Image 1 (cartoon, helix red, strand yellow):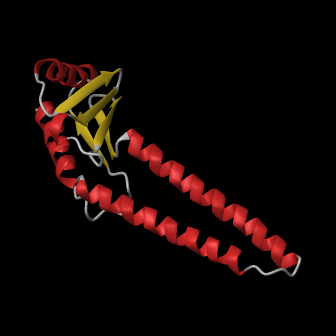
Image 2 (image 1 turned 180 degrees about the vertical axis):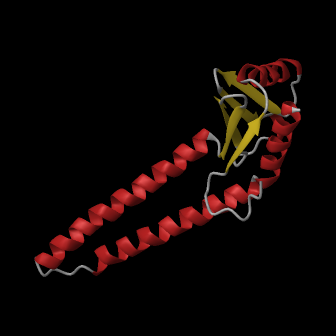
Length: 163
């Protein structure tokens, strides 16, 4: 998977394996029980989560969510890389906060325009919120680029377990 050429913030991949879904799940369960290292593997039904743990874990460390889907004579695997849940939740909170401030000051701006009152401060706050939105986007891109190495490690571990 080529992470740097992708526009999306959350990277995905798909793979078909010529084995039954129970065999694929068993491989991950066995690996999770036998090997303890820099990664934690959790298996629940047809979902597998792979996380970086220990000294290698940083606030920007990615996790890999794998979903197994049974097809006629093979297993279809969907992989999704994402940030840590706490970081993702924090970024969503910031986005909602910025959107709320933008909408509130948009309403105040409209009221001031209708009442023919000064509105420069309201417009300034709205422009600043747009700048903050772009800033949040570029910060998220930088965090993702920090995690490229660990994404590659998670993918390599995923491929190793499948063999």
